[in-house]
Length: 296
Image (tube, rainbow, N blue to C red; front, side, top):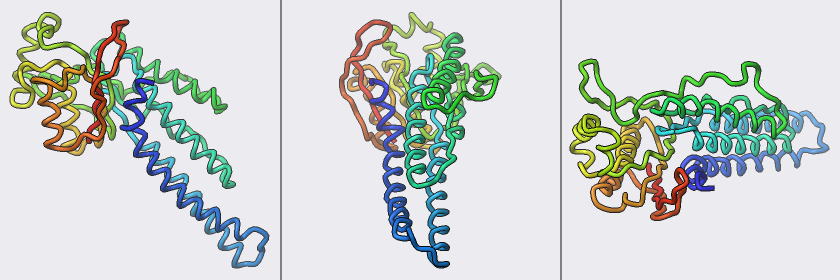
């Protein structure tokens, strides 16, 4: 339920609005087909054939829109956000399929929607390996539960879109810090690591923190917490047109001090369309207070 607070407004709301537009068009076509029932003259048969083709094109076209959506979690852990996101995309696809079947259009299969739409960045090698398994098993479970069988063997395939790297800093051949390259994705979602400014040096080490602060100088204030760098990277992806929308978690300290600067930068190049100021969140068994921000 907590993950859906991000997934629904950021990933699914635009698709659901688009689906309502498609249904409005499709309902008009279905009314035309109903008006032609029982008519067998040449003109009526030609009109029926044309309208059925238009309806097929409309519905199949929307499933292609769902299939073309790409989603990135730049701190994916074991892939929970992506798993939930994929399930939501598949559920919407099924809704379209059921509507199509009720309109006399059969044969729609879900295999154009799947794990290949998901992208992931993760530094922890174990979480990196686990994310691929979680996503594939979730996909297979959905197919099984909805009576679509299972994919051809091997059913657990490699996902090249899951990248083992640092999401906020990279190094060039000379060893100088540079901005990392994120995969292009329409939607960015996730739960960046919660590590406060005062703990960063003890956990990550002075060299790493010095490089990170230096790389983002002028963009992120020196006293910001670690999650702020994911917000800035996501903002940059949207500003440059490589992504369209983002929904990320932060500790509720994003509202104050140096962390608040990332929200100012987001407002300078886009807008915030969703904000949960203060909510409970469980992490490793500990209760936290978080903020959730959606921006575009």
